[in-house]
Image 1 (cartoon, rainbow over the protein chains, first blue to last red):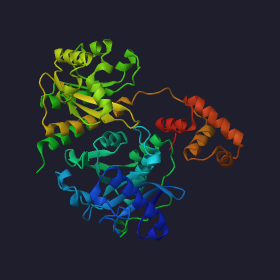
Image 2 (image 1 turned 135 degrees about the vertical axis):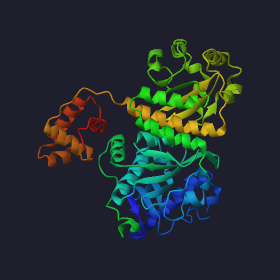
Image 3 (image 1 turned 90 degrees about the vertical axis):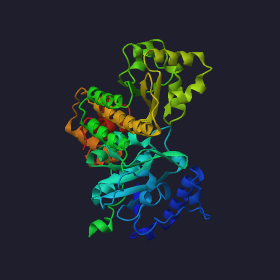
Image 4 (image 1 turned 180 degrees about the horizontal axis):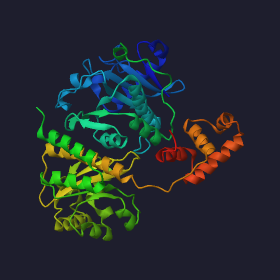
Length: 210
Length: 243
């Protein structure tokens, strides 16, 4: 199940967030070699982990097996602050557009061969369910261009923000991917599971609730 | 300032969205890339080694290579000697055919494939590796007598290949399957199964025994031609039997 962690409920997720920061360190620093993110305590935390970030945890009982972070584009975000070279056009800034960052899955539940793992597809379904409930229409993604076909097959409407560039030794592409109920239906079909992946109805992001 | 390559990419994506058939999409694509120096396109899922020659041809999704080439290619059994195919399955970054020439220079069979391709005006080209949603490796190639794309054009072709391939798969998924009729009770049982209920729970929800629920699910699997419950649920979605 996917748990959504915001400042309102973070107290209940102290241990899980610890695990999430360690998973991020393991995947981005140790595996991908993004050494400028390295932290001596093994918890990868950056300037965007503030009260505006929405964390999503894929949990199996008490264990965090997958993670991703959503950032509002109405404030400075990864694309505008860290990877502006990926964006040739004006960067999206809208309450209806959030940025998908730090997607990470524990190694033992990761994609078998080249198939999107059940944890990966649950995390994606989590974004779409949360988005549809919160009035969010699309996500900004910085990704390997190989993800593009997957997104198109999952009925995301993808618009590139630039051409692929080499970042830290890996081809990287920035896109905006819009979704709707068809995307969710497609994800559920792919997963062979019609049930919601979210644990409880998430609180609306504050900027949209007002 | 938006580059011309990105602008052309936007226009193409929109045109792909409007295309009503794989053929129409292929024509749109060819029309656009011919302005960039491409003479033919070829795209398909890479069959696993051991696939029969007839089945190999069924993996082709788009093909606008000169007449005679594809027949020749599969008949001669070129697929698993083709150095572009070998490179595709080993490394998932796009490449120009000239980039891999040093790797196959000493391999006479591989050289023959490339020489024969040259006889069909496929002397130079650029190939984009792809991975489908179900984890299969695919390749999308752009070829011509002379074709040496700039890094910018290569980036653009990578995007165009991914999008065109995704749309083609979607357009090809259309053929109607034989209709399946589920009884209202079977439909209900399948809906509960899709919601993740166990057979015992389905029995409780439908006020029948666990054995009765099992029987419904078995009958559903038979009608849908599926081996597992998960597959039956997926098939139920595809056929619009589930909400």
